[in-house]
Length: 589
Ligand SMILES: Nc1ncnc2c1ncn2[C@@H]1O[C@H](COP(=O)(O)OP(=O)(O)OP(=O)(O)O)[C@@H](O)[C@H]1O
Ligand SMILES: [Mg+2]
Image (cartoon, rainbow, N blue to C red; front, side, top):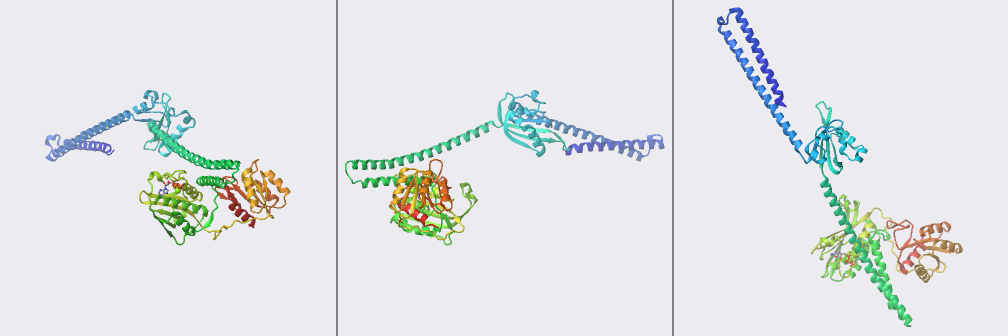
């Protein structure tokens, strides 16, 4: 740029010099002739002036020649560079590089464009570039928008499908830049297109592989889960079924000594109930009864239980923080979770060791958000052992139901802990080092204002009923209804039974003295326990209601929490459980 502007200035200078010297020389000659008639008679100064004039003229000529040569040279260089640039663009075969006029018609075409799109320059120059778009994109106005965006924002870039001359499609990365003259007028567009089909194909293949892997891992997990359930239930059913058969055989043979088999059947049923409870816990669908509680008091209250469970070889240390916040959690389930973790610690220290339970206030920040944790204040209960620890491979699976490395393990311990903590809106994390030990950290959300500072202690004794208290049992399963009626009658209550909502309401009409409705949540014929209770309360507001269910996800339980004022007992229940709950509901205001 600078060279170009200097050259004409040098030319002008030399022309001015030459013109001045010509004028000077001519003037001098005329002056000399007018005075002396011939130059020969002129004095020396005239000769000097003439010589000076000639010199200046020669200098001007020299400068002019030099400037012209310079211009020639720079124009040659420019031409050469332009040719090379043209060759470069034309020769690039990996990129389609071409230009469009302001209306979007192709004005130049390189080898890359021909290779990628299939058109020769002769075929395409003059055609509109929307030819390269898919019919869908053309119909949606994408080509026009691309030009508008490039003109407005100085650039348009996209990764999309484009169409070749033969109609086949390919994935392209396209960049469109507007070309403007020094006055800012739009002169056209430069377009660069790259064929990225291979990259897109590789990416798709990778995504497919990852999806297939995730699917197969999911199937493996499901297989393990269903296999585990089937295996455990089969064992339990064998025990129960076998015991019943034994009872039958003995009775038929006139042998009355059947207590042992009834006990075995009951143990089998209890274990089956525990199994479903564990599964519901993992599925985060066990009905929880969160209560305000002080974790320090709960942990301190477990000392004796832990000592008994862990045995002599393991020393227990508790480090309980002062000023610890309250939490809202189901105390029984929390104790159960701590116990589960402590038993795992015991199993990891067969030769004895040390179990440490620490509590502290803790703040989980945004860094935990990708683990599904709401940032905020939590109470941390950390249980550590100095046992064998876990490898990374084991650690990655410990929360899976039925995953166990123990010969006698069910693999349900930690999956229950996980389900319970998550259902309580908390977080659980395990740190483990093979050969060093393990720490299980349970975080429970801080309870800001404990609604009730005192935790109600449930009475240990089984409260009885009286014949003046009438309970209406609504349950569609005949065996379960019979069982409930039997144990309530045994407790001293007057008991009525109904198999569905309709017969329950009919029964109620005839019975003025019903005090409590004890109903299953799931009932046949389209009226559930909740609706039945609403109807009963509309007719007889003084009647108390206790619900029961085997499954948490229904009309009563939302996200595992009971609606306020709703009383629920979970199946399977025992006689003392039911006795306490019935008494509590009857005695409530
Ligand atoms: N503190 C620990 N130290 C080392 N390994 C542990 C610890 N806690 C758990 N594990 C590993 O995690 C596995 C799963 O634990 P989980 O409590 O779910 O089931 P389990 O203990 O094997 O069976 P169960 O709880 O019925 O006895 C264990 O088998 C063990 O390999
Ligand atoms: Mg365990």
